[in-house]
Image (cartoon, rainbow, N blue to C red):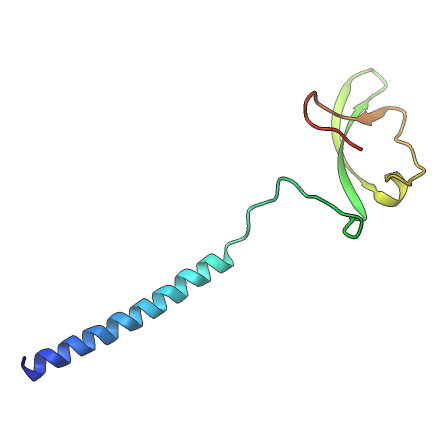
Length: 102
């Protein structure tokens, strides 16, 4: 092999490794900076309990029309040990077969 060909192969290999290194860095950066998908289910424990929780309420107005509204209720007031009741014109909305609240 001639000296020129050896130098060409070594320089080509060096450039290949440099491009591969920076390519991997770019791909890893893109992967790590991509936001995670939203969670569809959140499981809480006794130690990990939120201060507020979202709930879907079925509201009935004075004319008797029903509507749905999302409210954030305080765990302290409306949780298991809470003392507050929902307003008279509202109830927890639960579609058939969609789970249950306990």
